[in-house]
Length: 418
Image (cartoon, rainbow, N blue to C red; front, side, top):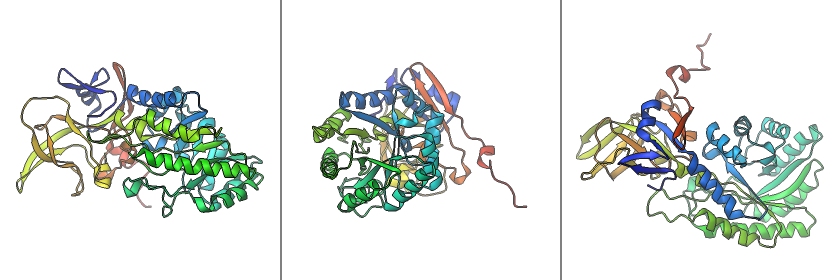
């Protein structure tokens, strides 16, 4: 199953010490379940791998922005990588330290910059000349100096899904590395900016560690050239993007070998390493629980209809991504081959097609594995479906950290025209 914190005990799937059937009985389905142990073990692996090297691990909030998950990591001392003012609001509400927050993203607004400046975040990762000028203007209005890194596009092929590749010259993100030195000099001349770092992020769900090393090598070289020109470059932000194994055959690089490879590229540079992992911390520490509603056959195909849908987990529809689908109660018997689909009125509402899986009946519970990242955060109310609960398990205890939505929640904030 490849899930951190999940295992079968007496043929019942558990999250840590808690049977998932017990969670479904209390929280209902569909619902997301996260293992605190799995999340913290992954975060700790990053810290161990960095060792004594100067570093900060900034958890990427966009992967899973639940307050319960953020608070868990904040208590562990994590920094955070945000891409919106709303994510900063969440981090602060969860007890995160703004002095350990970096603000990425290609389209920051003046209001978001003001909010982050007021909070006193660690660094703004700027992605264009226009953003640099706007940040300088907002910092000048406060008579402050904004700490800045410029996000450079190293033109590295990350060999991932095209929707989540971000490091090529044709992508909207970052500054072309060929133009970077001139823009660094321009930013350094602005009195209300403190240019201190070089940043990049080449994509997500990357399974080739060589791509990360290639990007790191280019950025270390750039940082050296900038220092020789008199810029006080102190930090190197290499983003996130480390892939995880969604299939048993996926050969994802481990956290510790990945970090060690990056540190080798930084050896002797004196740079403070910033990393922004998200998926590799939370993906395998979460599942989506769902209940079988119906079995049906059509045109010789077998369908398993479940109560979760594409509005709950859109990754299979959006990316054609794979998630293991396992029964909560493991039973003997031959497998079936079926499509697993939800109730939404779209042909694209599916979790698996022609999947070999356990023979299940209406009422049985299933878990969609490796759903802790880009699951709930991408969910919606499409077809006017209330979103499910989120549950955090810590040892033998579990807490509902987000209530299941009601029909009343669907129309909160709406009103009839006068």
